[in-house]
Length: 245
Ligand SMILES: NC(=O)c1ccc[n+]([C@@H]2O[C@H](COP(=O)([O-])OP(=O)(O)OC[C@H]3O[C@@H](n4cnc5c(N)ncnc54)[C@H](O)[C@@H]3O)[C@@H](O)[C@H]2O)c1
Image 1 (spheres, rainbow, N blue to C red):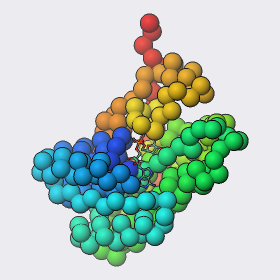
Image 2: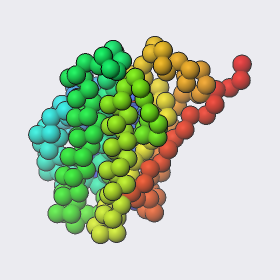
Image 3: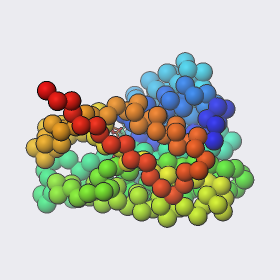
């Protein structure tokens, strides 16, 4: 699907991968982008950048750990844009210190609420809205290379990313039934605020690989939107090996 003239909603838009996706969409000629995040300052500064790029921006502050807020932002986005063409369910957190099994219980639950449940609710309501308006659409969910391995320090994060992949793959039939393509991206380590650079368990991996940039991931999001053959699958963005010293 061509990006020019289309409407989009991106969660986790204030920073990192979401912010890069929004700028890519604006640079590619999207007409109207709905920016969603809990960080209001980031939303406001991004909205100004998007408008400078020539696209319309609507920012909606929401705490995506609350399903009611997820539903509300999709309802507001649908009326503000006249219907969404693309959705990027991207917001995510890690559990953080202390490592499992001493994990803070509320953080462990929040990881599943934000990473997995908000993505499921967002996908479900976006499909309902697209069907109601008779529109084709593309929904992209941010999983991770963590979906292919175990993470003893943060199993809730690992479980959330495995879950995103299973949910997304299960959406394959929607492409044929409704012309709605649901896809996942599985980025390797990408230079954003979520990366626990000081965590001892991550150090060996950081020494072995070249860290990706948020723009590397946004380019893949653009490729998925444009490639009408992709549905119910994932695109993995692997880290290249670190250059030899
Ligand atoms: N950076 C990486 O190495 C990497 C690798 C694979 C997957 N990912 C995934 O990419 C996605 C984006 O993360 P990022 O790397 O850009 O990190 P980031 O921390 O820069 O961005 C995450 C965004 O989500 C927002 N957010 C957090 N909690 C929220 C809530 N309750 N409600 C609304 N918004 C909330 C944050 O404010 C932030 O803007 C996440 O799903 C993450 O798991 C990241």
